[in-house]
Image (tube, rainbow, N blue to C red; front, side):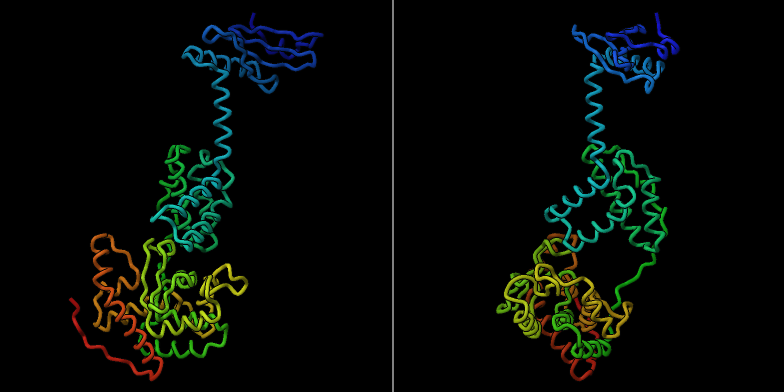
Length: 410
């Protein structure tokens, strides 16, 4: 006879365990201590088994019957309900461990070690910081439970602080994490795919750069009069000669230099394009690096942090030095030395544009073309490096501006 709610509620314990049957193998087990437990007796492959389906009153009679029918459907398909229950627990435990933060950490670790496509150190630091902003909102959630609205709310918090570019980039990186979870079979689809256009587009701003020759001379003279840290002054003096990216300069290590051979080889792991970059050094550059070497050499970082030699100088050091000289961020930045060199070298008409591009370490999508240019323009780059330093000395010294003839470069 089937059970009723009243019968289940009023059932009393006895000296021994009592079983009240409900039909189709389900019964209520009443323990001597008063516990009321739903159980299902069934057979799979000829073996009798018992499935625990919860305790009353947390699991009502109606819910217990629903679970019984689900179990019977599995049995009809040749599956063992007890084994499926164990698998569900394992899946739930894995899902709980696969939080957005955990997969973020896994993704970032992979991108750091991703061979020639791996993140450069500066890119890794920036990307991990941006993802941490998202993790503040959804980091503890299982990634399989995150919906588009959750991601949008997290990104809106960043956007609400006026950080429009950070919000845009954080959304891109979050999407990359979700797609990584899809690729590793922990998520069905990327919840950010439908969020395109949801954010306010940031206004594109360019790095402040001085490209007027007369003003370049004024800047160089100002740097020579810099009264701050000696190492910062030397970094400011070297930056216009080598015009590498600020991160590449501050992460430079003495083991990368052959000052006798006037060569600096930046390893692929430190380059934005993930390819080793050879920088020919002018006589002026070598002399400046020897000054630095006398202070920070012969090993370790060329420009170490003021707090510890195990880390490079802060990414803000050069920009802070320029601010101290009176240059606002929209006038001149550490990155602006590259635009300065690119503009004036191209305006000179003396150098092949491909040689200038190679000196700036800009990528070339054509691998054959890129390999050819590395060899074909090396001597020209060596000559260009010396000419450029001599030109900077001319601008610094007399302040006279060389008027370049308009030469068409083939």
